[in-house]
Image 1 (cartoon, helix red, strand yellow):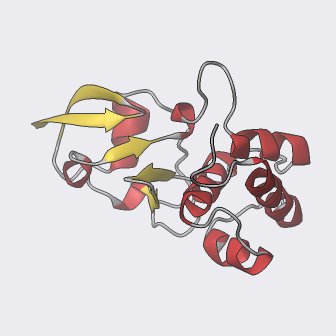
Image 2: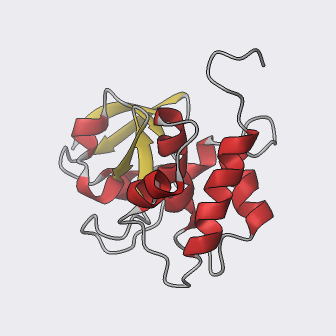
Length: 160
């Protein structure tokens, strides 16, 4: 076991885990942040997506030791003061989920996209979301939600 200080959702947390334990396992089983889902365990479905230094990352493929110096954001870290993020609100408004299992990963992938590309085209959205699987098939509503979130977010550099 090794000691790590992780920056998760803006808080520094201490965790003991083997260096090579997956970040997904640490988040769910040691820190009890269960919004990040185990899907395939192979980085193919996107259910375990978190933001690692702002980049959408499959947490099942990342060793906790590799994430110790990164800023980690999970679905639990997106809302602030009881207010959903623009992406979370857009997913709700568009009904962009059914069973909800993929939703956290979808929202975090979309958040990463909008941080890089504030006003993406539909093609850019599809490309960025490629690899996030939704077994319920709500892809058109997911694209609509991301477009809605992009429209509702202030332009970079704009006064808030």
